[in-house]
Image 1 (spheres, rainbow, N blue to C red):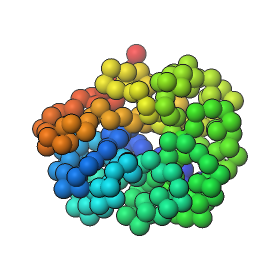
Image 2: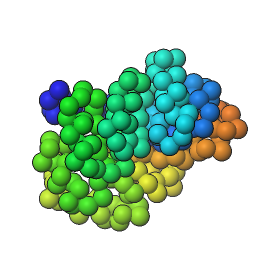
Image 3: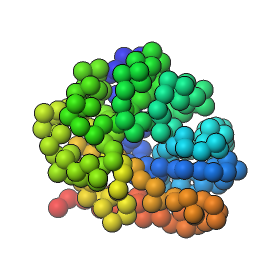
Image 4: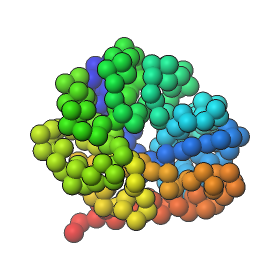
Length: 220
């Protein structure tokens, strides 16, 4: 698939719910009720991180049983991770960093891929291979919005999905940035609430995240 088509697909996905819950799930049985709570709260795009043994089964269950959800697979580190994401039926894969091996593997497949960057060198590596949407990670520790401004100058066509250190208190500020298409964060569905089955709490937090987005886009 051409890089232009991949960018278009990714733009469509990220426009659905620019607040993307980053999910670390330890019990695949919790995946479907979690996804339904997030969707009910207005957040249709979820990132299931490959940080636990339950992650693959959890992502597969959401794809199969919650068609309103758009499932991305995160913490993609290797070619094998990309292949697993594609086999699950994920809508996209996303990585905390970038390597030539990952970029080469992504170029051989059809699964939209979002590489992670932190420096201008990382970004140059991605841009020269046709990427116009990248993950900025860890966003706050790496310099925050000031760093994003600095990176955006030499690369005006690039858009970012910042993740890392973003929460309820600062999400709207990031979303108001013209180069940010989405933010990711674990605050919407933290591990403790998932373990507790606190679906009503998670749904309420998702609704609040949706309201943050609307506020960030309101005219000044």
